Amino acid sequence: MTHSPQEPAVPRRRTVIAAAGGAGLVAALAACGGSGGESPDDDPAAKSPQDGADTTPATPAAPGEEEAGTPGGQELARTSEIPQGGGKVFKDRKMVVTQPAKGSFKAFSAVCTHQGCLVGDVANGTINCPCHGSKYSIEDGSVRHGPTTKPLPATPVSVQGDSLRLG
Image 1 (tube, rainbow, N blue to C red):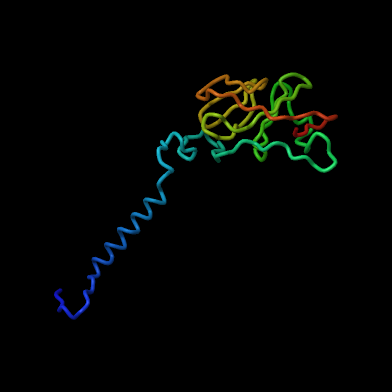
Image 2: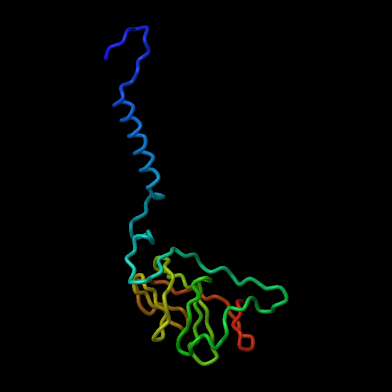
């Protein structure tokens, strides 16, 4: 296609499509990029969880919110809900409560310190993460089995009568 000096240059259809396609590709690649320096091991979505595992990236539990007029914070559960020698995971609160010995209750963040999955259950004296097999002690949150190397952080909990309360 030739044009005279008086006529404005009209781009060919292929040129316009190629330019738009290239810009779209650049935008798509930019949207898919990470924050830089991340490896697939850092991405919770890239994990290979066991069946039924909750792989939602989690954040540590917030400190207990005080209810108006309720000393000791918000009720979390009844003491009878926490089995002796076991525990219960409260996914909505991102915490786990255990009863290692009769009448002794401990609470920890339910966020695995390996890669941020929520722990799945409490069994056989350990708090268990379904994503990569990390296990923590029900007594103090210490590591019993890796790959994690950091313990679960403790969360304040108190007992008032037959009620477990935050704080």
